[in-house]
Length: 412
Image (cartoon, rainbow, N blue to C red):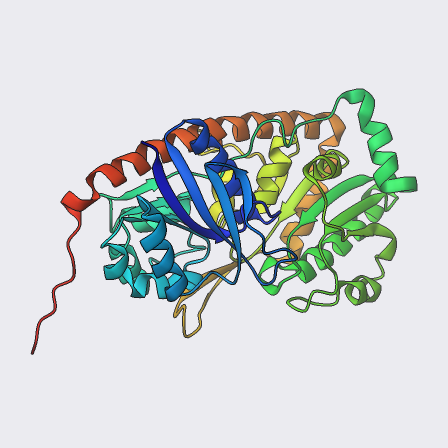
C-alpha cells in the first residue's frame, strides 16, 4: 500500500523556489510507486481555488496562507496520512508545532528545512524536538542542526532536473543574446535573480556595478557591460531601483526583466549571460546561482548560508566562479528570531570580482562555467535528492512510533 503524505508548502505548481522544489520532489517520489501526496498549496491569494489533480497520487488544494489548526485537524482525520511534510520558512509553521501532540496521534512530522546563518538557533530547539525527521537543504543548516540532533538530521540539498537548465548549442548563442540584449549583445553580461528586498542587497550590487564600469573604462577604455536584474524594481520590500540606476547614472548598463518567465525563457536568459551574482546578506540556499551553474555559467557569490557550498567546491576548495569572504558580520534579530548573523561584502571587493571575471576572457569564463555545471550535476543531483528522501522518509514512517516520546507534564 502506498504511503500517503500530507504536505504544507508553497503551491507545488507555482513558480516560486519552494513550489518548484516541492513539485520536483513529489514527482520523483510518486514515480517510485511508493507514495501518494495530498498537498495544501499556499499563496497570499490564488486566481483559482479548484482542486488541482495532477494525477491520482498528486493532488493539490489551494489555500490562502499556510493553513490553520482546524483545517489541519480535518485533513488528518479524513486523509489519515502516514506523514505530515512541512516545507518552507519555520515561522509559517509555529501553529503546527504548537499542536504537535495532536498530530502525533496520527503520524510523524517531517521537515525540509533551511536556516539562513549561524549561530545555532537555540530558540528553535522545541521545533526540532517536535519534528521526527529534519532534512536540511543547505549544508550550513545541516552543520547547525546535526550537532544537536544527529539521530534525525540529514543533508539533502535542493536539486534541478537536467533538462530544465542547460547550455544552449553554440549556433543559438548569438541569436539568443541579440534577442534579449539588442544592441548590447556583444557586452559582458551579468545576471541578478532575486526578489527586490533588503536582504538581497540590490542597491549594493548596483553601486558595485557602477564602480566596475568606471574601472572597466579606465583599464580597457569602454563601458561595454550590462547587468540584467530579473526582479520587480518597484517592489515595496526593496528600494526603487529605477531611481537608484538614475542616481548612479548607469541606465544604459542595467536591464530589468520583470515578467514571470517559463523555465525555457529563464534558461535562455541565463545563457545570454557571462555570470550570475548573489551577495544576499542572508541566503538559506540561493536557487538562481544553482540554475546559472547548471546552465554552464560561473557565479560570483558571498560565502554565506547555502551559497558557500555552491561557489566553493567542498571536495577540493576550488571555486565555481569567484567566492567572496564576508568583510563584515552584523548580529541582528527580531522578536521572532532573536539573533542571527548578516554577512556583508564591500562594494570595492564585489566590483573587483566583476573585473576579475571580465579579465578572464570568454574562453576562461567558458571553462569556469563548464566546471560549475559539472559540479552542480554531481553535488546537486536530482536523482540523489529523491533517493535520499525516499530512504529517510520510509524509515521515519516505519519506525517513528518506536522512537517518539510524548511530552511529560509535571505539576509543581
